[in-house]
Amino acid sequence: MYDDDIEFDDESCPKCGAQCYARRCSEIGCDDGWIDRYDEDPLWYSPGEEERCDTCVGTGWERWCPKCGYDLQRKEYINGEPSNSTYTQEFEEFSDADPGL
Ligand SMILES: [Zn+2]
Ligand SMILES: [Zn+2]
Image (cartoon, rainbow, N blue to C red; front, side):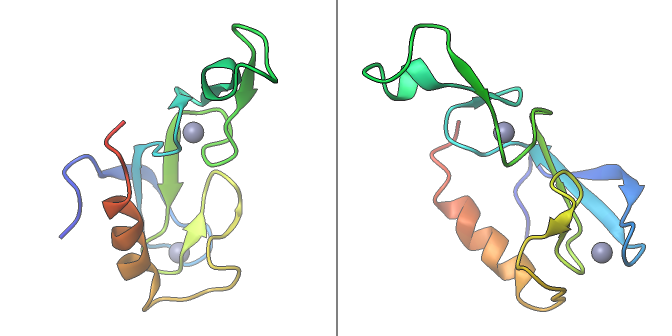
């Protein structure tokens, strides 16, 4: 099944109407939607220099449709096109690589 930290989102999918999921952004270094670049690469960035996270677009949350794979934050399909069979499995594989931040 899914990770414990995945929750049901308030909204349903604008594309297919399915119940959407949400969870804290798993992007490495993402802290409530912002990534501290200095932390990642002190040579190129100044202390405190932050960049908006692409994955959650600055919200700190990933929200997606498990049915068609539509990403509600980025407003695009995660797999580039609708897919209702492979996405869930791919997402779980992706979670396994999550270092637990
Ligand atoms: Zn993020
Ligand atoms: Zn959908």
